[in-house]
Amino acid sequence: MSEGMASHPPDSGRPVPAAEEDVRTRLLEKFKDTLLEIAVVSPRVVRLVIDRADLLPVCRFLRDDLGFGHLSCITAVDWKDRFDSVYHVSNWNNGCSVQVRARIPRDDPKIDSVVSLWNAANYHEREAWDLMGVVYEGHPNLERILLPKDFKFHPLRKDFAQEVDRQYISRRKLKGGK
Image (cartoon, rainbow, N blue to C red; front, side):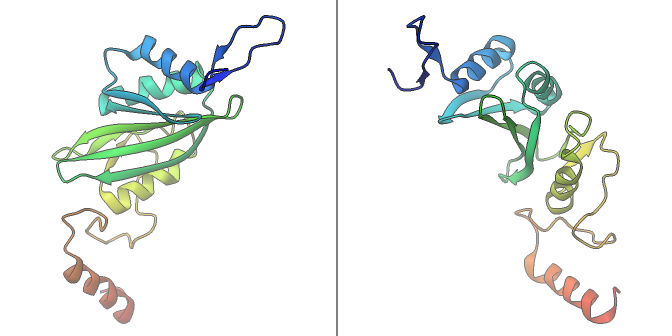
């Protein structure tokens, strides 16, 4: 049997594509004009790169048509010239995971919230906003989750001035918040 193929029921004798190849094929069929990249990066893992405008249609298709009902993580990455919002979703029926990387322009760090699709996104989006400053539009309660509510910065950004702002945090702890 060739690599990347799963066996079909014994009576047919035909190999069928592994779960990740099926997911890749179906995503290409539906979104071939909007996907920036798509690849099977390891057994049972598909990675795709999209523009932020395509996030909700792609995620809705993953959930409703392909059975990706579990969102395990959302994070943001600062690439100096842009941000990525990264989503990890899983289909427990076929054991496949998809990593969706949505590109966001640095000068307009906003993207749609996926809380309406996966409630687990609630805290993940808040954390990504708190630490990176990516605004998840339509989020029901986008407020700080880790840092003080009056903190003015997003400390995981590459342009965050470490020394000055670290002193700000220390003074807050020592002097009761001023």
